[in-house]
Image 1 (tube, rainbow, N blue to C red):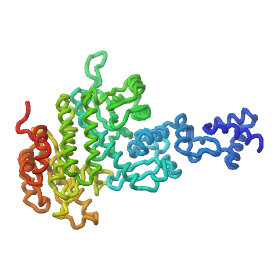
Image 2 (image 1 turned 90 degrees about the vertical axis):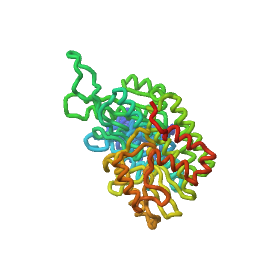
Image 3 (image 1 turned 180 degrees about the horizontal axis):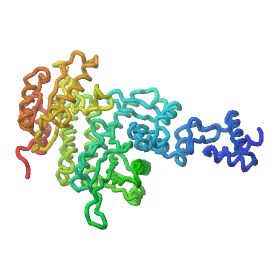
Image 4 (image 1 turned 60 degrees about the vertical axis):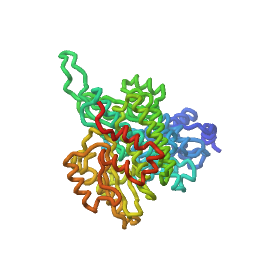
Length: 549
């Protein structure tokens, strides 16, 4: 072994030692008084002779490779060690995968690496897609698309079982989608709170429950929500409100602790949109972070950066933690049961009742309307499971649009009624009893035409194109704890007279009074009425006969 190779062998004798190219060149130049060019040749020869190992194809600071002990693998641990100092976006991505049990959505990967969604060449950022390809080629991660939802995921290949066993990956995806939905579950309630407190006044674009993999884009970068605020302060000289607007960008993280990697990525995205204008000076941006738990050091750093930050507990009461835990338990029972029997139903109904009681006692009912609506949907799913004896039910199913594969829609309950050879698409709306649901159009969410004219046809097309269901009749039903407008009722009555949409076992719509009558009298619910308090819960929290003052 020549003196150069011996020097390099000794340098990397410590297995964990790694050096970027320019540092290694400097050491060779200092030790042997050679030129930079010759030092590069020495390194190249040493790699070919397997004296040391290069990090190729992974480049880091200024597109340089790292060098290490020949026996060290280019694995996750090695990449974490190198990228922590020299390639922060990659470090954050790999750390996120560790934090989330080896899986994250592509949306979360884009956020954590602070990658632009559009105009990527403008920012001269290292391509996330290139990184993913290299990680995939080196069997460090696997990029896969969930067949049902179309959501792309990154899965950390921690062992051979993950590569070969699609069931393991599917279970990881299912669990992580539940986490993603937990994050977006409170966005509507958070937006309502911000409006009530004067932070925002404009229309908000936000990450939705029916497509939690699609956030709001602001100047090429993804955020959980974004809008414009007129809350810009007063000018010093005149005392008049500044006519300029402030960009508002939000981060909402509920299912896990908010950490340093999240704050770094959020801050990088904020800086990118601040300086993405050609105008003189930076844009005014109001960043806001919402979390359930946060690391104490990260909390201090948020304050030092003057970023508005709110704990969900501070705006919705400390009991929100208890409610979330009960909600998670309910979802777990439902997810693990192929069919909901009376025993499972009793447990779900009991926990929903406890959750609604906690919400009411905390005085946060107005702030948690969205969560209350979710609890209605879950309770009704349980009731419908008992109503349709022997049928298979799916809940919160996300289906891709057949016209636009970038859009997905969530369907509250889908009943596979083999007795009638029907698939029933059910829309559930747990709204205030004072709410009136209008006829609307296909561009107005929550309206009658939105469901029957837009989302129901998407689900219908999905099942009609699936050969497994080619003989089934696809029906629709809209159920709410609120009321329909007169115009809506006229349209719904027309639909109810048609066998094309009306299910054999139900009408195609139920408002507050009609739903209560169904639940009180249907023979299939007799046992559930006797053994549980589901009817009392619905009457107390959703189907009350008059508006409370």
